[in-house]
Length: 265
Image (cartoon, helix red, strand yellow):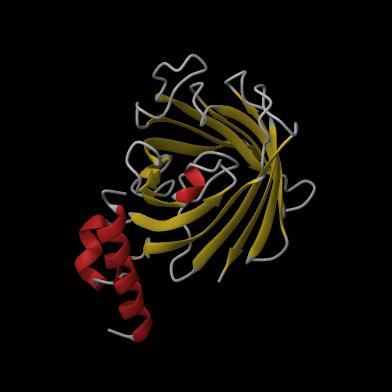
């Protein structure tokens, strides 16, 4: 086993031990996508969410929410490239990624336990037959402080790029998520921990192949429920930025503007 594979195996085992009781995975603007980070690359996300108001509806000061973290791919869609070589062949086109996030600006209580983990497995479009959608299953925001940060949001999602003749309409995706019912609550404090994930996205190749736009929705009135509008610009193969606007389903939550930078190593 070469040095890279040994290092990656060690990281995989470490994350497996400490995160499977298992934050942002590869996302659209707000919700996890069906994409997986490229094999043998480390992805770093830097996400900021700034409220359009300085205080919440109770008069409490609002802070810029900051999320930093790496994501690493565990499996390639080419079985011969993976850690177990051809022994991985039965899994075919399945890919996977994992990582963690360091979060600040979520209040003095939650900021005491700022580390969250995530994991995702997925297959790309057309993996096993023509017109097959992409699928992903995973979990994120898996914190280690019981009843405070263990939001444990699990999800299943499918996606498909639609073309009509030579016109690329975009990629549509839909899925379902379920989180910790003790923590995901609506404006009245009642359980609201499960709902839909729906999105449309498209590369605006008529303008530039570097420009991507998206509308991204997640259900419930919990802190996860929002509709998000935004676009990204890809500066090169390793660096891109997203600018978006977030409107929360819970009327007690203030809208935010998000700026996200993604860097691949």
